[in-house]
Length: 139
Image (cartoon, rainbow, N blue to C red):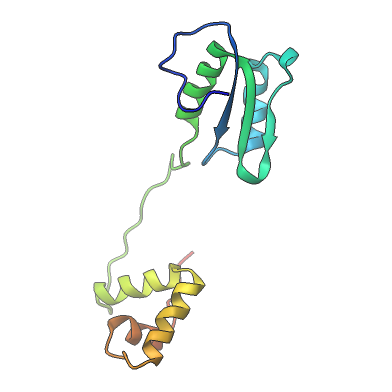
C-alpha cells in the first residue's frame, strides 16, 4: 500500500493499493464517477463509509489519475455563493461578533462560559452577552 502522494513516482502499470480520504466529496458520488476509470478485474473500490475513505487497487498510472482528480474535486462547494453584508443599525460590531460566536460555539463551550460567569466573572463581555436575549438568525 502506498502512503502519501503518488504523483512524484514515474507512471507505470505496476499494481498498487492506495487509501484515499475524502474531505468534501461524498463517497458514493465519488464511487459512481470514478468506477468507469478503474480496472474491475482487480476488485473495484472498497468503501469505508464511516471514515469517508476509499481503498483502490489498480495500476500506478490509474491511481495517479485518480489522485489528480480528487485534488481537483475534493473541495468545498462554494461555486455560485455570494457573501451578503448587513449594515448594523442598533448594535455594536464587537457585541454582535461575540454573540454570533457564542451562538455558533459547541454546547460544551457555551456551558463552560456560563460556568465561568456563574463563578464570579460577570464583568467579562461574554458573560454580559450570555444574559442578553438570543440572536435571531436570518434565513
